[in-house]
Image 1 (cartoon, rainbow, N blue to C red):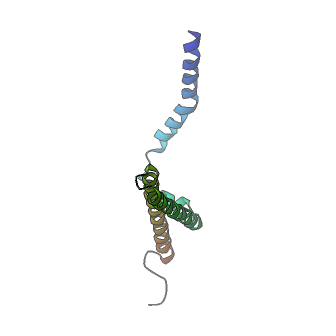
Image 2 (spheres, rainbow, N blue to C red; image 1 turned 120 degrees about the vertical axis):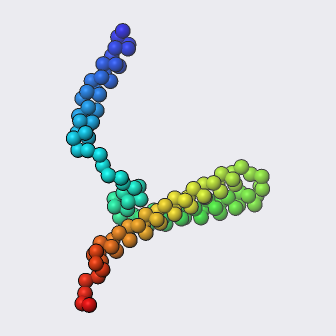
Image 3 (cartoon, rainbow, N blue to C red; image 1 turned 60 degrees about the horizontal axis):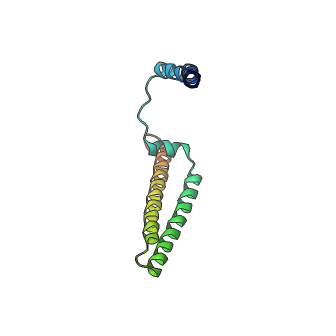
Length: 123
């Protein structure tokens, strides 16, 4: 009883103490609107940080592709070459993701700076 009762009591107290207040506040606030990962990342990450990530991932992509080429040249039936190519593909996809986030961020900033009716000026 002591071995099972102590963890159960701890879980019950933790649930009443930490989980229920959060759920009660969430019901009071209501549901959040749909948020895409692209928009969330563009709003919370600076353009400088995104550029730095793109450069780092591009260098990792180049290194993994070069290493895969060398491994495939040295031993054509190497499992390491296949793993390095898969890693290169993953780095490439991650690079495309950050480029899309950066483009989205620039597009949103351009729309905010020009205003809803275009640039302000005479005409």
